[in-house]
Figure 1 (cartoon, rainbow, N blue to C red):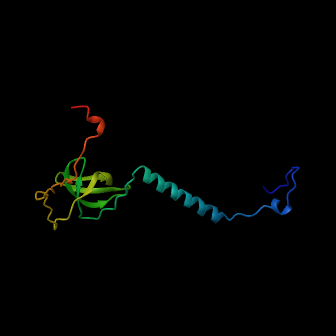
Figure 2 (tube, rainbow, N blue to C red):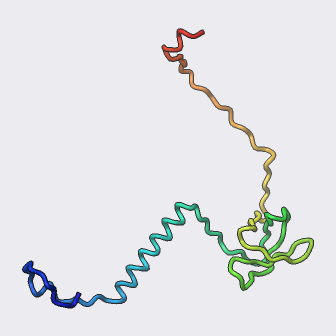
Figure 3 (cartoon, one colour):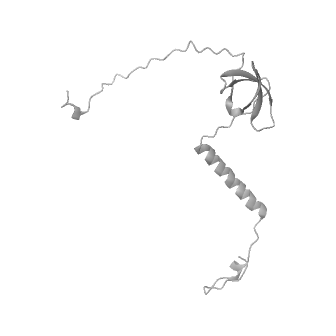
Length: 133
């Protein structure tokens, strides 16, 4: 504390001398604690981070249920200008879902269901149910 204490307990004078604390160390420690708090919050609240979209990428606009193409990002954070068949609109990243590239052949019609095989183990009722028919 940097001052002499009025106390009846004996203490070594070396312990009463103030020690200098590095400002940089305090700032680094606070930043590390902040980062840990952010990671814990994001994990508990299932925060998702979306990657930035590039120009000419095809996206699905969730609130309008239509397809568009990214023209450019805007000054606002996480906002993009999207070209649609009705014109140019601005949307936040959370309303945009990246569509697969046109070169991919995605066919959802030929998915075969796997048959579930039950084990050959016999299943016995619990003994207390033997009284009930």
